[in-house]
Amino acid sequence: MPEIDPTDHEIAELGPEIKDIDDADELREMLELEEDGEDRAPVKTLIEDRIEKVEGDDGEVDPESVDLEDLTVADIANMVRDIDDVEVLEDLLEREKEGQDRKTAKGQIEDRIESVEGSDEEEGEQLEYVPPEEKHPDLDHPTNDKQWVESLDDAEYRDMWVYCETQHGELIDVSMEMLGKARQLMDDYNDQYGDEDGEPEDVVAVLIGDEVSDLTEQAIEYGADRVVYLEDDRLERFRHKPYTEIFCSMARAGGQVADEGHEAVDWKDYDEPRYTVFPATNNGRDLSALVQGELDSGLASDCSGLYIEEAMISNPAKTGKPGDSKEFDRILHMKRPDFSGFEYSTILCIDKPFRDFHPQGASVIPGSFDLPEPDPEREGEVVEYEMDLDDDWFQVEVTEFDTLDSGVDLTGHDVVVAMGRGIGDAPTEGIELGLDLVDAFDDAAFGLSRGVITSSYSFEGHVESYIGEDRQIGESGQVVEPDVYVAAGISGAIQHKVGMDESDTIIAVNTDPDADIRGFSDYFIEGDLFEVLPRLTEAVESGELAAAVAEASDD
View: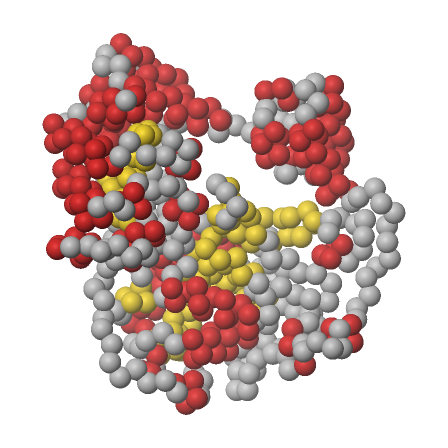
């Protein structure tokens, strides 16, 4: 008998319970109970989806014995990317040829073979260094003024730096989320790589602003080993120039390209950080691009996943010699949404001959990582950074401004109801219907797609107060993971998907049967939100949401 009897629960209650069950047999017993009891289609779908996920994650596939006919092309691609043994890969290729002989599957295996051992082409000559000014004398090169844009001699990179954004004198949630993730990454990093001198690499929190010294202990509690801060009353508001100059001065302190007065510091003796992480907020996006550009590296923006791993590369631009393959270690893999569709790309920032790409930098979508529990017992180093701030950095004076409210936090709710462009025929009425549905639940929040916020809709009465960027869900807004997510009149663009696709149950309402959101919804109701939402509201108020959704899905 399973611990949870699904017939005793509504579907909204089952979602968070089921996602923690990893025993497929227990899930099957639950499915039998539901079939013998209320036999609700939505509940059975929820349990079946969990069974599929559990069995899909059950153990690692042995490439030497796996039956390739049981694997999709995507399964094969995921499997071979971790195989470095050419003989195993060649055996897989032969078995695929003798079996289904799928062109795309063979291509995945052949690409991995080439990546591991190099191409079949005859090895070329070692690349020779030619300064960019000589190679392209007619171009205006940054190296004319920034000699270190090329590789530093015996450069040393260490630590993961986290820019901690503040608001109203407090760390914003994404700053704490990044500190927790950085702590996890660097703990694993130190276990895997260690250090020749026995010194672990650290998580370094960076605080810039007015009265930020009050937040240093909190940054340590959330995972920082060291906090470097600079406070000045002129930095109360975010400013591009001073914030960029300060961060870069900190990052270069104690290294070969340190600015005057910071050539030697007692808290840092390497050239630049190994990794830098920023929040993908309005200010964080600006600062991350400016800092990484000034540090002569690249940036993977709006990431939702980070991990550190080796990477086998055969590109001669990186290896330095055609036909060669080279394994790069300590590479930060930065996972971000792909604008070409409903997929994710993994960005790598890898050095090449005569050119270092450090720090490896990423900005992180708020809500991508769990908010860690603070540890008041943690100890760390606090460094007050001192430097002269040029008056020219503050040429623009802000004489008057309004301070927005702290905003609306859409995370942590059982239900989120989000509205999209489908309200276009009667925007005020559409929003009111969404708010009615929110009110019907015990714990629900109201969100919007970017299309509503950037539109020219005219809203009337109290509805206007609900239209603001603080309610936006998606890549440039908030990331939510409720038990139930209702998307009304939302097409499902990738930018919106990344903000809600971890929801336990997704219910979509759309008049377009080919809307992208259909592909990742648990329930798709083809219909006009002006007709469907009132029915959902009535169902919630009567305690029969699951039945109403199933009925509406079949209508």
